[in-house]
Length: 383
Image: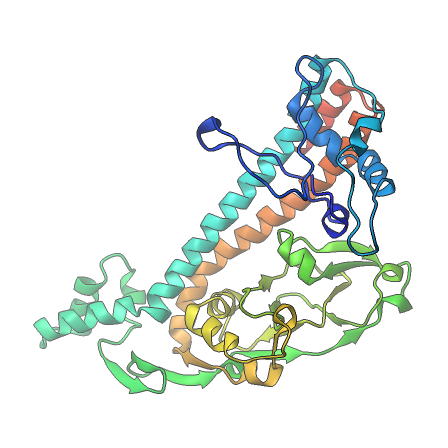
């Protein structure tokens, strides 16, 4: 459990599992290392106990040191009194809460796989130009073949109607060799920046979905906050938009946000709020904004002397050169990738619900306010 002020306030608590199940690890002295006492406290219960708000508030009250660098003394936890249920009940509590965390972790892994699949298709079609290279090679060997014959021989894994969309030769451009008939444009040909602002303080009792830089870094989970707690002007975030961070662009913060009808959603002004221009789609822009060449160009635009607060100019980002494929190829990519990335939003939505359930159950179970059988029924209904 992190004991330094900023980390403590963000709830930086984690379990260590040695690779292969054996061996000690080493960590910063900014951590308090905790283990359940043998025959007294289950390790899983001890983990969730440290995440309980009662423990967190106690630790905050024990912090010492100057402002901004306060720490929890290592000895502080020895004076904290908590209710310890029998071991059997501790294990049941850890099992209930752990099952929710396991599902959240499973969703995270699934999201990573689905996103990798979508980005692999993008890389193959729009970065490596695999279908074009394959068709060019077959064309050289069989110059008299029809495009249908070349497409079938070169791209057996693609549907014929998709393979036919790709040319069988290249031409030079300012970005190097690109498929014949494609062109080089700028990022502003693909997206439009939205700049509608909102002052959440003007709606103090309205619940906002707040998309911030820390929320992105913490698993891309926007915080639900009342307007009175959001202290600065924000950009409005509409449905079907994408957020692209201009802050420290060496960190690729590209957010396919999940905003539902009726949501009051706002984001940090460190983000560009991007609307997609037809015929392009969110899946295309998302993969484009994460592609190596685009990231490399963004990183070259940084201004500012402080390493922690370098930014890329918005006007320069919109002028970044990108390859513009025909609309027919973009539509084919939409059919191939949209369902994959849509599923990641569903998993993330489910994980937010599960996390809220876990966070609601945790204090009641740890404090003994909720019986185990009641909690099991709640989890069963939400499974």
